[in-house]
Image 1 (cartoon, helix red, strand yellow):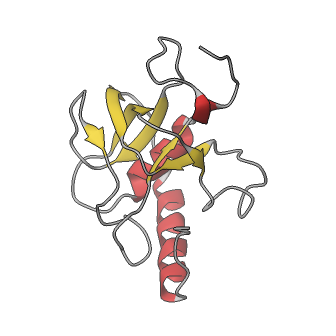
Image 2: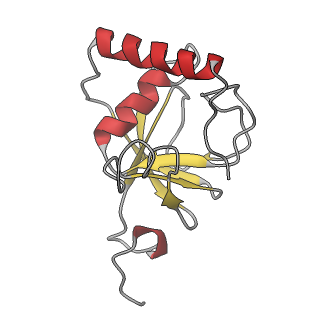
Length: 146
């Protein structure tokens, strides 16, 4: 196997593969796949062409807190089943580089575990973020879906 530092090129079968986080309100089981093709949690809720993951717990917590729906906020440990790329919604647009370590893929993510103990953001922070997302939605600003 060829060595590489690029997480998108690592073999997912490696016992040392990077494990990522995915925040959601969906009730998933270990071994299930998180796939594109469902309505997005953001913007006008269009059919999502990509699935998103992050290498930071904080970004996954935001994903869980901002996800639409009535389910419990969940943080899953996931492994990509194919190539991943920087999430252009955050990379170089809001945060130079990829400080949030956020990525996307057209390939599913396999659920390999769940973080069951984590601390959410303050209610005021969540409300401010949701208010900002609602403002962007009304301004017609959508997620990038290149």
